[in-house]
Image: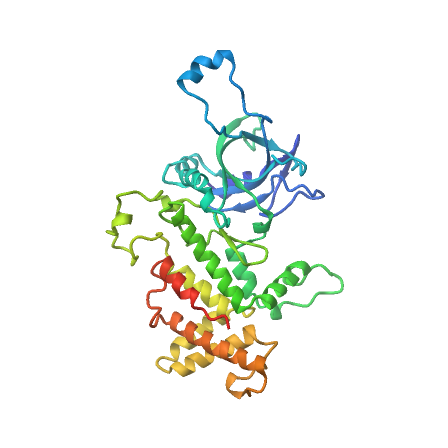
Length: 418
């Protein structure tokens, strides 16, 4: 369970008779364009590798005469399951090749816990069964369980079998977790040192030139409409879990991937908070649960801690830093009953964060209404400030917007876009 044990899981074979020790998630084998085996993510319980899989045979197994007596007692399924094995390169010409994310638990106890019907493997089976309800792809898509063979890092002649969870890998969701997305979105690039002439690909702060350009593009192009699209996708993903019969989701670790265009999300680590699928009858359905202010019934997900923070950083923190967002939030609260002062703070931040190219950095009251575009911008800022102030301070009608996903949906639905 120690750090050294977890580092051992980072040493994997990337091709026949060759082993690579990866240093960090996202690192690809040096000098190779083949990402097979590299680490997608690493948490406290498991590590996730990218792996190529191919079917073990082109056709389903046929029944021989020796199997007739067995098949009579237990007929083969109408839709036989495809068996997959690892391949060391993805053959783009093969329609049967699978690009997969393989999740390996660090310990036997954690592996056994993940296999429980009410835990991750059980819910993966349910999600695979109900995959037709996941047409928008907001939930991770699972291939199923697999068996991996690994050797002891100190003695390569000692082997063990591991049961692993295999899901689909998609390039579009490969670059950012929700945490990294928010970190990049709020990063204050104005404090980043300029590129030096002797190091054209890196900044003094450790950011590569490409990383800095990507963050600048994210911050420059992300509008208030994009804020709404992002939040709607997140809440719809929570609703998709309910559609697929999942009872709970642990949102505290932000186990969410963000697409490359930042407009959609994908939920991962669907362990259901070890509560399994929705049962009838149950406390979930009857609503006898008393330790959370949930309407009945709805997905058991704690929105009180993370969702307000996400909204605050999206509105107040764009390119300004987490400290700036927290400071402005405090100023709004310190305004007390002086509602107009609090809203003026919000309007100024909205103007600077989202309308700096359209309006000057003056307060909205100093602008004339001669320019139609400017007038529309001022009205949008005014309406958004009214909405955000009521949401932040949980005033009517948004007192209960973090109670459950349906209240949250109603609230985000009314974020002004014009």
